[in-house]
Length: 140
Image (cartoon, rainbow, N blue to C red):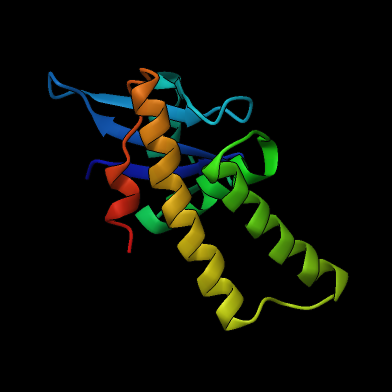
């Protein structure tokens, strides 16, 4: 059952097992791209019947997380250069008023799996206890 992934009001949330066998919830911070403690959401995402709660697969969670990071965050370095690449692809689609091609979908998804791992590694090095780069590695 764990880890489990959700979208809560369009915000990525993950439930993970704690060292003592319990459950912890973490919600993506759109300000930093890191993880905020969100144990108050455990019952809501597991048992709530709110139309704004959606279970996600691991890969959907990775893609949703990276979509939000790429949309809300700006910065320097390799991760942000890759976010710019994704942004350019999406802007091209919008400008041309068209759906993404299969090649563009594969490109964006591949970049976002990579940026998820890179960003989570940065978070881990900075002490974010909820960072887990292995979630992106196994979402292929």
